[in-house]
Length: 124
Image 1 (cartoon, rainbow, N blue to C red):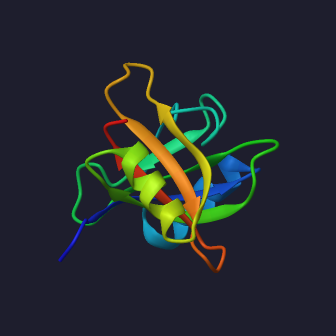
Image 2 (tube, rainbow, N blue to C red):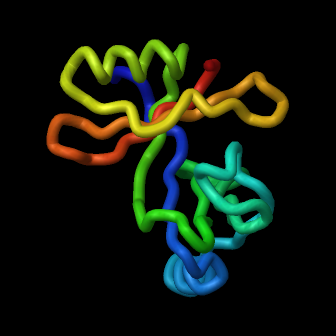
């Protein structure tokens, strides 16, 4: 297998309602805090799920003004290089690299040639 999927996100405007819904539906518990960047989710509105359990970890967040989306992140050795390669192949960069506050981790988004939003995560 190539690069693994390492994280998923469910983003909307009513973060508490979304966390309640998915918590009840799937038994998910959330550690609420900040996402890597405010472009991903409003401060204090990102609910991390699954970090200590089997499966892919993820988050449910967003807030006012955040576009509704569900996406997954693929682990890459360089976010910038992955975004450049996606552009070369006909994709469109949407965000990033956006650095985490500590500066040692970044995320980026691109759309594929049919418009699907995909995330990449790793070193900038």
